[in-house]
Image 1 (tube, rainbow, N blue to C red):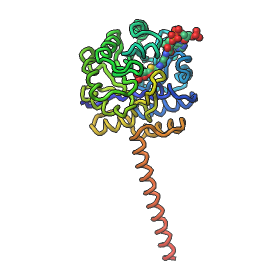
Image 2 (image 1 turned 180 degrees about the vertical axis):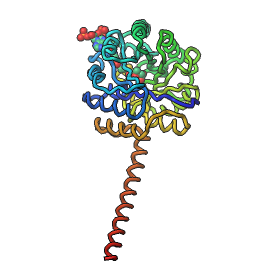
Image 3 (image 1 turned 90 degrees about the horizontal axis):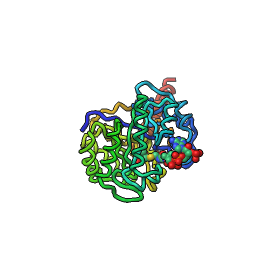
Image 4 (image 1 turned 90 degrees about the vertical axis):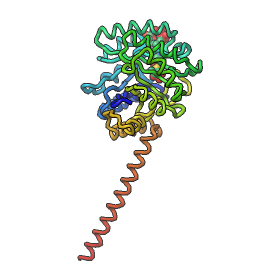
Length: 324
Ligand SMILES: CC(C)(COP(=O)([O-])OP(=O)([O-])OC[C@H]1O[C@@H](n2cnc3c(N)ncnc32)[C@H](O)[C@@H]1OP(=O)([O-])[O-])[C@@H](O)C(=O)NCCC(=O)NCCSC(=O)C[C@@](C)(O)CC(=O)[O-]
């Protein structure tokens, strides 16, 4: 197990990209600022992708112009091509992400090209970004399963991960896009990937469709992975991955890490505030079980304290009446 872990917050991007109702830019900016206050060192803020493909993130430029950027915190954005990179650089982004897939069908639906074409395109993006001193992260979507093709061979995911790492991505996040993985399939995929990419350059990105995300992350931690992607309040889902639910909730990951005594540097109370804020703004129940449990416990404690204070006040009033 690693002694410390980076929790890579993807809620403002992965979490919001699939929301059916339009979300105001100021809500996105407030969420990112609250996450900054919680102590994250990486907050994936938005995507410079085609607004025809992902309308919800069509305000990427405005988000990046308005967000408060704290020193030492990265606000990475997705860039599928040179056009995206140009937009990201103009907005002052210092970290970007390219996103390939381990499945041909998903690659076509998500970015309208084959896996091989995408890798060629990304190589140009990575080279240009690095020339500007901008760090590039890579994603391998559908690393264990694809909504269109079914199970994915571990070697196929590993090969795409190795290609992204080889072209200069400082880190590659292996994504269970539709949350079908189990610890067994996750371990097989990571074992294959670790033969080609060191653990220090790997992250995991788990969706929680089948409720396996926390178990999968525990497996990844045991295999030496120390960067975990998550979304506050369990927001999210990919518009091109039918049936996929949100990412693993950040609050659930923090609770897991606390249980192992693994350092993460994030303030859970501040995350809960961000979690309640965005759940309220979207008008939906909080998607994190840990957040729901902690908030219920807090409400209980506050009600008990209020009852005790009222009892004490009543006692003092009686004593005052007797003395009079
Ligand atoms: C890649 C493309 C652009 C190809 O889409 P395309 O239609 O093949 O692109 P094109 O180059 O032919 O251009 C078509 C139009 O899009 C515009 N365009 C072209 N590029 C851009 C850009 N960067 N920014 C803004 N506009 C752009 C371009 O200017 C043109 O505009 P028009 O002349 O028709 O008015 C498109 O498929 C796309 O934007 N896909 C993004 C899909 C996406 O964001 N999916 C969700 C993120 S991936 C994910 O969620 C998985 C992940 C990362 O979370 C990990 C996991 O869980 O698996």
